[in-house]
Image (cartoon, rainbow, N blue to C red; front, side, top):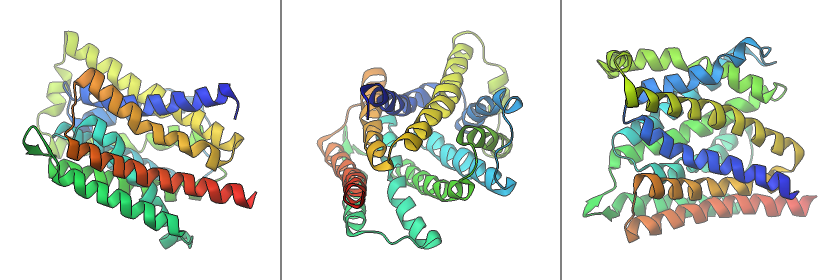
Amino acid sequence: MTIKHMALALLVAAIWGIAFTVIRLGLDVVSPLLLTALRFVFAAFPLLLFLRPPKAPWHIVVAYGVIQGAIMFGLVFHAISIGMPAGLASLVVQCQVFFTVGLAALFDGERPKRHHFLAAGIAALGIFVIALAKTDGQTVPLWPLILTVMAAFAWGMANIVSRRAKSADPVSFVVWSSAAAPPLLVAGSLVLEPGALNALMGLRGVDLWTLTWTTMALAVPTTILAFAIWVWLLRTYQAAIVMPFALLVPIFGFGGAALFLGERWSLGIGVGAVLVLAGLAINVLGDRRIAASSS
């Protein structure tokens, strides 16, 4: 991989990692389901008016938008809003790697390798340690942690669904699928977040500016730009070469949360985070070793 392309991969990791801090800042002024809805409204429009529909069955496009946009990100945004640290969320949600491997075995007949089981076991131990760890005398909030793990499972499901659209242009696919998420998210907000829509309409001054820039940051660079670069890299190089850069997402997530949100972890949370990151590294680098030996 050239230095230029490595820089692009680093850029994607940085955008995705720092996005968790942006989410936390946006949640200070708007409810989680509405913020998620706005993210995907602007990920879809106005590009949807200029891009042809993807060459994929519509039920696949809609299913991906609902699972990835409404369910996965709805859970992440809600978890952060009720106490999940943004930096920790950027790490825990990467457990989607293990759920993807398991779901691929279940639905696509892929056989996990030994290093997949080892990696998943180490990461699961890390999640357990995080659940028991304490910061400032308090444990990590269990329900937000569970929601984040559920979001990782939804991400794994979305990955399996996206495989059914192999011939679709990836940018067109993500833009059109993004349009499927807002209706469900707005409906969920009306039921689960009474008064949130009125509060959104009443935003003024600094709060309105915060909502504007956080929404656009989550919609354009995070959802559209980073995704397009990542897919292009995966089409240019073997996945085993590109995927290790995804390990940097939590690093940027930790750094952004510490720098802009002042998040600090106890030793126990740090140990759990290292275990999860180690599991991710074994999974990704093990796949890379296998790809290299077969080429």
